[in-house]
Image (tube, rainbow, N blue to C red; front, top):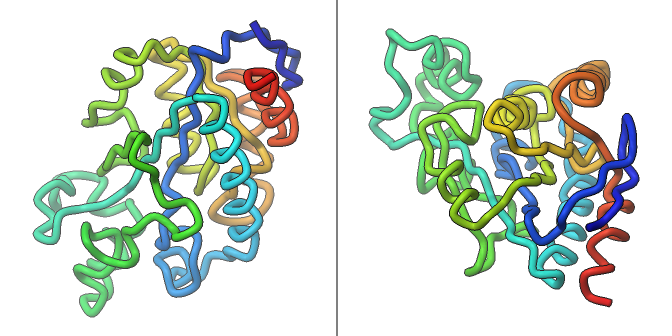
Length: 226
């Protein structure tokens, strides 16, 4: 068992039953010219988040921890978007932009496009699990829950973009399914003003899980190699 330096209090876990979950680290969310950038969202912090997650993934793989990539995206015909009868069609940012700006149709979060692709620095390795999702939560309508249970996973170190949307949605869903969610606060970035990051951190620490810094994660998993 490892004692994690976390908030609101230290947390003892079995690292052999833990996985790192990388939420939507795609060009859409982290790169200039991607969906968030097109929408006018400040992505200046994305490069540092990419570097932080890269260091975590290198350490996790050395320690034998599973790595899970969640990837948001739709089929070119949008058949898995829910259609106009679904609120997802009207509120999810890519769907909203493609509806309002027809020239973007098929270019945002569409399978096979640059926007959909995971950023080059965080490309999945053959042993990683990649789960494509069509809703904010990585558990909704996917095999993520069964894949984690099959691997005996109970604890999730969660990273990615956007903290206040897909990261928080996935983290809350994990909590509802009785996983132990741990948000890596410096390995996540919000979509919108900094107050949104603070709000999610507050929610997690007080109601849905724990937060910790990536340096404390690195120190904890290093013990598995010693």
